[in-house]
Length: 78
Image 1: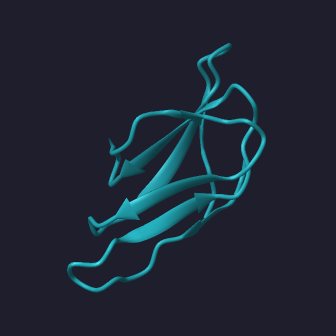
Image 2: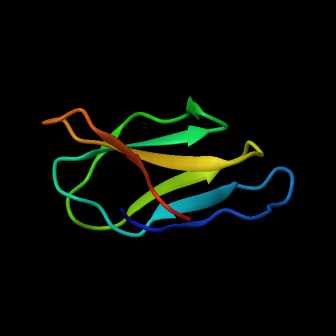
């Protein structure tokens, strides 16, 4: 499980905020959700950080990891 950081406020008309997954596991799929709904295409980890950029919708963002081998999922912390 990796830490999620970022978010915050931005000015109307601005470019939005970034949510950062501070690590990833190679081959695992990471999906950004807003209030429980997918808001991005899945991103596959390569061992480093993953940035979800230009987020302009208010709410609670979560990153969900899914193992393609087992199908098991886990919410990232943050």
